[in-house]
Amino acid sequence: MKEDDKISFTAHLKELRKRLIICFIAIGVGFAITYGFKEKIFEILILPLIHEMKHGDKMIFTGLSEAFFIYMKLSFFAGILIASPVVLYQIWAFVAPGLYHDEKRHLIPMVLFSAFFFVGGVLFCYFIVFPVAIKFFLGFATDVIQPLPSMTEYLSFTTKMLLGFGLVFQLPIVIIFLARLGIVTVEFLRKNRKYAILLIFVVAAILTPTPDIFNQLLMAVPLIFLYEVSIIGAIFFQKKKEKEKMGNTDKKTGE
Image 1 (cartoon, one colour):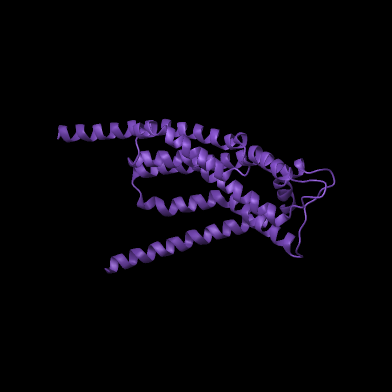
Image 2 (tube, rainbow, N blue to C red):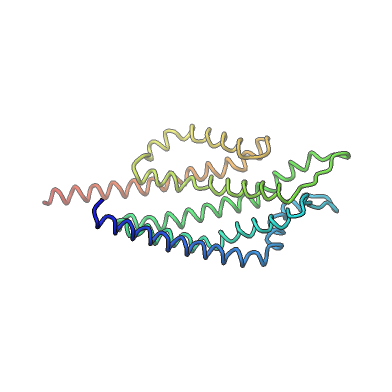
Protein backbone atom coordinates (compact mmCIF):
# COMPACT_ATOMS: atom_id res chain seq x y z
CA MET A 1 0.00 0.00 0.00
CA LYS A 2 1.35 3.44 -0.98
CA GLU A 3 1.96 6.19 1.61
CA ASP A 4 -0.77 8.37 0.05
CA ASP A 5 -3.20 5.48 0.21
CA LYS A 6 -2.36 4.94 3.89
CA ILE A 7 -2.94 8.62 4.66
CA SER A 8 -6.22 8.59 2.73
CA PHE A 9 -7.38 5.43 4.53
CA THR A 10 -6.45 6.90 7.92
CA ALA A 11 -8.30 10.13 7.08
CA HIS A 12 -11.41 8.14 6.16
CA LEU A 13 -11.25 6.24 9.46
CA LYS A 14 -10.95 9.51 11.40
CA GLU A 15 -13.87 10.97 9.47
CA LEU A 16 -15.95 7.83 10.11
CA ARG A 17 -15.12 7.95 13.84
CA LYS A 18 -16.14 11.60 13.98
CA ARG A 19 -19.48 10.89 12.27
CA LEU A 20 -20.18 7.89 14.52
CA ILE A 21 -19.43 9.89 17.67
CA ILE A 22 -21.88 12.60 16.57
CA CYS A 23 -24.53 9.93 15.84
CA PHE A 24 -24.07 8.31 19.26
CA ILE A 25 -24.27 11.69 21.00
CA ALA A 26 -27.47 12.54 19.07
CA ILE A 27 -29.02 9.18 20.01
CA GLY A 28 -27.96 9.68 23.63
CA VAL A 29 -29.58 13.12 23.73
CA GLY A 30 -32.71 11.69 22.08
CA PHE A 31 -32.79 8.90 24.66
CA ALA A 32 -32.47 11.38 27.55
CA ILE A 33 -35.30 13.51 26.16
CA THR A 34 -37.69 10.64 25.47
CA TYR A 35 -36.99 8.93 28.80
CA GLY A 36 -38.59 11.91 30.51
CA PHE A 37 -41.80 11.16 28.59
CA LYS A 38 -41.56 7.36 28.69
CA GLU A 39 -44.96 6.81 30.32
CA LYS A 40 -46.70 9.09 27.82
CA ILE A 41 -44.99 7.39 24.87
CA PHE A 42 -46.01 3.97 26.18
CA GLU A 43 -49.60 5.17 26.64
CA ILE A 44 -49.68 6.23 22.98
CA LEU A 45 -48.26 2.87 21.93
CA ILE A 46 -50.87 0.87 23.86
CA LEU A 47 -53.89 2.97 22.81
CA PRO A 48 -55.01 0.40 20.18
CA LEU A 49 -54.86 -2.31 22.86
CA ILE A 50 -56.66 -0.22 25.49
CA HIS A 51 -59.41 0.57 22.99
CA GLU A 52 -60.12 -3.15 22.46
CA MET A 53 -59.70 -4.32 26.06
CA LYS A 54 -62.73 -4.69 28.32
CA HIS A 55 -63.39 -2.28 31.14
CA GLY A 56 -61.17 -3.13 34.09
CA ASP A 57 -58.61 -5.14 32.09
CA LYS A 58 -54.98 -4.10 32.56
CA MET A 59 -51.52 -4.93 31.26
CA ILE A 60 -49.10 -6.77 33.51
CA PHE A 61 -45.39 -7.24 34.04
CA THR A 62 -44.17 -10.51 35.48
CA GLY A 63 -40.65 -9.58 36.57
CA LEU A 64 -39.51 -6.96 39.08
CA SER A 65 -37.30 -5.21 36.52
CA GLU A 66 -39.51 -5.82 33.48
CA ALA A 67 -41.25 -2.43 33.48
CA PHE A 68 -37.96 -0.58 33.98
CA PHE A 69 -36.26 -2.27 31.01
CA ILE A 70 -39.34 -1.85 28.83
CA TYR A 71 -39.23 1.90 29.41
CA MET A 72 -35.50 1.86 28.68
CA LYS A 73 -35.99 0.02 25.37
CA LEU A 74 -38.91 2.22 24.38
CA SER A 75 -36.92 5.38 25.15
CA PHE A 76 -34.00 4.03 23.12
CA PHE A 77 -36.21 3.35 20.08
CA ALA A 78 -37.87 6.75 20.40
CA GLY A 79 -34.47 8.38 20.84
CA ILE A 80 -33.28 6.86 17.58
CA LEU A 81 -36.34 8.27 15.81
CA ILE A 82 -35.70 11.74 17.20
CA ALA A 83 -32.01 11.55 16.28
CA SER A 84 -32.67 10.12 12.80
CA PRO A 85 -32.34 13.50 10.99
CA VAL A 86 -28.88 13.96 12.53
CA VAL A 87 -27.91 10.35 11.77
CA LEU A 88 -29.09 10.62 8.16
CA TYR A 89 -27.18 13.89 7.72
CA GLN A 90 -23.98 12.34 9.11
CA ILE A 91 -24.32 9.41 6.71
CA TRP A 92 -24.84 11.87 3.89
CA ALA A 93 -21.83 14.00 4.95
CA PHE A 94 -19.60 10.92 5.05
CA VAL A 95 -20.72 9.49 1.71
CA ALA A 96 -21.15 12.74 -0.27
CA PRO A 97 -17.45 13.49 -1.00
CA GLY A 98 -17.12 10.20 -2.90
CA LEU A 99 -20.18 10.75 -5.11
CA TYR A 100 -20.53 12.40 -8.49
CA HIS A 101 -22.69 15.50 -8.81
CA ASP A 102 -25.52 13.54 -10.47
CA GLU A 103 -25.42 10.89 -7.74
CA LYS A 104 -25.57 13.58 -5.03
CA ARG A 105 -28.54 15.18 -6.75
CA HIS A 106 -30.54 11.93 -6.65
CA LEU A 107 -29.42 10.64 -3.26
CA ILE A 108 -31.07 13.39 -1.18
CA PRO A 109 -34.56 12.90 -2.73
CA MET A 110 -34.15 9.13 -2.31
CA VAL A 111 -33.40 9.55 1.40
CA LEU A 112 -36.32 11.94 1.89
CA PHE A 113 -38.78 9.69 0.05
CA SER A 114 -37.46 6.66 1.92
CA ALA A 115 -38.16 8.40 5.24
CA PHE A 116 -41.60 9.45 3.95
CA PHE A 117 -42.61 5.91 2.96
CA PHE A 118 -41.19 4.43 6.16
CA VAL A 119 -43.25 6.82 8.29
CA GLY A 120 -46.26 6.09 6.08
CA GLY A 121 -45.87 2.36 6.68
CA VAL A 122 -45.54 2.88 10.43
CA LEU A 123 -48.65 5.09 10.60
CA PHE A 124 -50.63 2.68 8.44
CA CYS A 125 -49.70 -0.19 10.75
CA TYR A 126 -50.56 1.78 13.90
CA PHE A 127 -53.92 3.19 12.78
CA ILE A 128 -55.19 0.43 10.45
CA VAL A 129 -53.50 -2.89 11.20
CA PHE A 130 -53.13 -2.73 15.00
CA PRO A 131 -56.85 -2.31 15.81
CA VAL A 132 -57.79 -5.22 13.54
CA ALA A 133 -54.99 -7.52 14.73
CA ILE A 134 -55.53 -6.79 18.43
CA LYS A 135 -59.29 -7.30 18.12
CA PHE A 136 -58.65 -10.66 16.45
CA PHE A 137 -56.25 -11.91 19.14
CA LEU A 138 -58.41 -10.72 22.04
CA GLY A 139 -61.36 -12.49 20.40
CA PHE A 140 -60.01 -15.80 21.72
CA ALA A 141 -60.98 -14.80 25.24
CA THR A 142 -63.80 -16.81 26.87
CA ASP A 143 -65.43 -17.02 30.26
CA VAL A 144 -62.56 -19.21 31.47
CA ILE A 145 -59.74 -17.73 29.37
CA GLN A 146 -58.72 -14.20 30.20
CA PRO A 147 -56.04 -12.31 28.22
CA LEU A 148 -53.26 -10.85 30.34
CA PRO A 149 -50.97 -9.06 27.88
CA SER A 150 -47.54 -8.31 29.32
CA MET A 151 -45.50 -5.19 28.62
CA THR A 152 -42.60 -7.18 27.14
CA GLU A 153 -44.78 -9.20 24.81
CA TYR A 154 -46.70 -6.16 23.59
CA LEU A 155 -43.57 -4.06 22.96
CA SER A 156 -41.98 -6.94 21.04
CA PHE A 157 -45.12 -7.43 18.94
CA THR A 158 -45.61 -3.74 18.14
CA THR A 159 -41.98 -2.94 17.32
CA LYS A 160 -41.71 -5.91 14.95
CA MET A 161 -44.95 -4.98 13.21
CA LEU A 162 -44.11 -1.29 12.93
CA LEU A 163 -40.62 -2.03 11.62
CA GLY A 164 -41.97 -4.65 9.21
CA PHE A 165 -44.55 -2.33 7.67
CA GLY A 166 -42.05 0.51 7.53
CA LEU A 167 -39.63 -1.66 5.57
CA VAL A 168 -42.30 -3.15 3.29
CA PHE A 169 -43.41 0.35 2.34
CA GLN A 170 -39.91 0.93 0.91
CA LEU A 171 -41.06 -0.98 -2.19
CA PRO A 172 -41.26 2.11 -4.47
CA ILE A 173 -37.78 3.27 -3.44
CA VAL A 174 -36.24 -0.14 -4.15
CA ILE A 175 -37.91 -0.51 -7.55
CA ILE A 176 -37.11 3.06 -8.62
CA PHE A 177 -33.49 2.58 -7.54
CA LEU A 178 -33.27 -0.64 -9.57
CA ALA A 179 -34.81 1.16 -12.54
CA ARG A 180 -32.26 3.95 -12.18
CA LEU A 181 -29.45 1.38 -12.30
CA GLY A 182 -31.04 -0.23 -15.37
CA ILE A 183 -31.60 -3.58 -13.62
CA VAL A 184 -35.37 -3.43 -14.24
CA THR A 185 -37.35 -1.60 -16.90
CA VAL A 186 -40.88 -0.26 -17.13
CA GLU A 187 -41.73 -2.97 -19.66
CA PHE A 188 -40.48 -5.64 -17.24
CA LEU A 189 -42.54 -4.22 -14.37
CA ARG A 190 -45.70 -4.05 -16.48
CA LYS A 191 -45.21 -7.49 -18.01
CA ASN A 192 -44.72 -9.13 -14.60
CA ARG A 193 -47.44 -7.17 -12.80
CA LYS A 194 -49.57 -10.30 -12.20
CA TYR A 195 -46.62 -12.12 -10.61
CA ALA A 196 -45.87 -9.08 -8.47
CA ILE A 197 -49.48 -8.98 -7.24
CA LEU A 198 -49.31 -12.69 -6.40
CA LEU A 199 -46.09 -12.14 -4.48
CA ILE A 200 -47.66 -9.18 -2.66
CA PHE A 201 -50.56 -11.36 -1.47
CA VAL A 202 -48.09 -14.01 -0.30
CA VAL A 203 -46.15 -11.39 1.68
CA ALA A 204 -49.41 -10.01 3.09
CA ALA A 205 -50.48 -13.50 4.17
CA ILE A 206 -47.16 -13.96 5.99
CA LEU A 207 -46.95 -10.56 7.68
CA THR A 208 -50.62 -10.04 8.50
CA PRO A 209 -51.34 -11.68 11.87
CA THR A 210 -54.96 -12.49 11.01
CA PRO A 211 -55.81 -15.23 8.49
CA ASP A 212 -58.97 -13.82 6.86
CA ILE A 213 -58.84 -12.26 3.39
CA PHE A 214 -60.18 -8.88 4.56
CA ASN A 215 -57.23 -8.23 6.85
CA GLN A 216 -54.78 -9.44 4.21
CA LEU A 217 -56.29 -6.91 1.81
CA LEU A 218 -55.48 -4.18 4.33
CA MET A 219 -51.83 -4.77 3.53
CA ALA A 220 -52.03 -6.08 -0.04
CA VAL A 221 -54.04 -3.17 -1.49
CA PRO A 222 -51.61 -0.44 -0.34
CA LEU A 223 -48.67 -2.52 -1.63
CA ILE A 224 -50.34 -2.91 -5.03
CA PHE A 225 -50.87 0.84 -5.10
CA LEU A 226 -47.21 1.38 -4.19
CA TYR A 227 -46.19 -0.99 -6.99
CA GLU A 228 -48.09 1.19 -9.48
CA VAL A 229 -46.39 4.26 -7.97
CA SER A 230 -43.08 2.48 -8.55
CA ILE A 231 -43.89 2.01 -12.23
CA ILE A 232 -44.63 5.74 -12.58
CA GLY A 233 -41.32 6.55 -10.90
CA ALA A 234 -39.50 4.06 -13.14
CA ILE A 235 -41.03 5.73 -16.22
CA PHE A 236 -39.60 9.07 -15.12
CA PHE A 237 -36.10 7.72 -14.53
CA GLN A 238 -36.11 5.62 -17.70
CA LYS A 239 -37.06 8.62 -19.85
CA LYS A 240 -34.42 10.70 -18.13
CA LYS A 241 -31.81 8.04 -18.73
CA GLU A 242 -32.74 7.83 -22.42
CA LYS A 243 -32.40 11.62 -22.74
CA GLU A 244 -28.96 11.46 -21.11
CA LYS A 245 -27.88 8.76 -23.58
CA MET A 246 -29.18 10.78 -26.51
CA GLY A 247 -27.35 13.85 -25.21
CA ASN A 248 -24.10 11.94 -24.93
CA THR A 249 -24.57 10.52 -28.43
CA ASP A 250 -25.18 14.01 -29.85
CA LYS A 251 -22.02 15.27 -28.18
CA LYS A 252 -19.96 12.45 -29.65
CA THR A 253 -21.50 13.05 -33.08
CA GLY A 254 -20.70 16.77 -32.84
CA GLU A 255 -17.13 15.98 -32.03
